[in-house]
Image 1 (cartoon, rainbow, N blue to C red):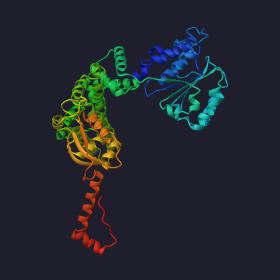
Image 2 (image 1 turned 60 degrees about the horizontal axis):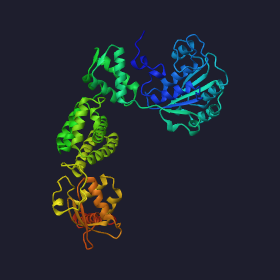
Image 3 (image 1 turned 60 degrees about the vertical axis):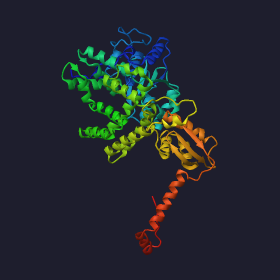
Image 4 (image 1 turned 90 degrees about the horizontal axis):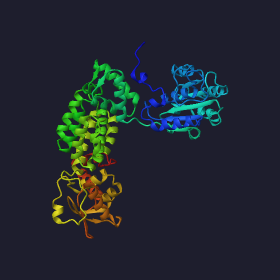
Amino acid sequence: MSYRVLARKYRPQNLEQLVGQENLVQTLKNAFEANRIPHAILLHGIRGVGKTTTARIIAKSLNCLGPDGSLKEPPITPCDVCISCKGVLVDRHMDVVEIDAASHTGVDDMREITESSRYKAVQGRYKIFIIDEVHMLSKSAFNALLKTLEEPPAHVKFIFATTEIKKIPDTILSRCMRFDLSVMQPLKIVNHLQNVLGQENLAAESDALAMIARAADGSMRDALSLLDQAIMLSGASHVSAIIVESMLGLSNRDALFDIFTDIFHSNVEQALTKLHTIYENGGDPLLIAQDLIHILYWVICLKNVPSLAKDTAWPEADRTKGQQLADLIPTSVLLQSWDLMQKSYEDVKNSYQPSQALDVAIMRLAFVKDILSNPTTGNAPQQNHPTSSTVSNITQAMPQNFEAMADLLLYAKEGVLHGHILHDVHLISYQPGKIVCGFGDRAPKNLAKLLKDACERITGKVWEVEVRSEYSAPTIVQAKAIERENLKQAALNHPLIKEILHYFPDAKVTIN
């Protein structure tokens, strides 16, 4: 016989073999035991979690006749030996019709189903229609199915599978019993892969399986396919972490962790050098940006859930380096870096020079670190009133000028407060941790408190905001307007511009 890939060879054949779907299994078991099997079942989940497999298991159980053909009621576990079970296994059961909605989207296809549903089952108890990727049916096809789905004959069962539940009309959803299949957790994937390897008389390093589980992103089928590839690539009975790392393109992962370390230590040039080395080795900027986002997510998780550092579903290197970064980088920097990298990913994706866009993203990360990080402690601000000595001890990591402080608020998504800073605050003096200013007429009465609380929350330091009634300095917006007007006047007074306007009197000078 020809070789069967692991994803097909180890496809579950009954509910007991389904991995990671305990709630679904228990509900279906109860339904079979009580003979309360719904006429329409909808299975929803990401690719590779077992939707189609579950549909076939249900179909097998519904029509299973038992080893001797004497069963009167559907069993929970199909026998796999009766003519009905064998027919489903080889996809030749006369009463089990499996349809791919991607290639049968029209109303005529659904009309065939409704016409066929009138006739009783020939080979089994029920006539069962499995419609895969049901969300791809047209609106007319859904409407053609409605009446039969609402009042089907007693001998008809519908089983739908979909990855995009939102595309299915509510009129269809309300007529089905819905099951949301769980995303496979890395530890469950690793355990299942170890079981498969045992049956294949093969072995693999734990870190290798952890990498595969993470790369599968919740899909057991993807995990088995990757394991198949790793076995073939290794050419032996042992799958090593180095082989999987190379296969998945993870050889640069350590370098990406180091890039974050360099950024936090203000070694931007060194970080860019490592990034360019990855480019030279064939690294795709978009995939690198993806990996950077994944690493940030992992470090944020470690920062807030330290017990994850003992989770063996993640490679040892990721846990060690991730914990080092979590200990090193404040939460405020991590969260803002995550937000910035999400936006930078789109920039890299849409840029005609993706590598340059990613370089700029790295430099932006360094800027965020400079205005947000607190290299001493990440503790919350003290509650006592700030003194002059407290303010003077503010570190150099604090925003060093008023406009940097305004940028800080913008990065922290304090948009309304940032607007007040630009339009309503007249700066008298500024030093890290202390603002002396006046407020315009449109400023809210509690602006000083809002500004103080926001700065303390973001920087983790004590701030003082002193408000004075007498001031002469312009706001940031007014200062920029004055600057633009000065530039315009300087341009108008330039001999060359005067000569141009002499020959082109209708021309206008604008400052961008």
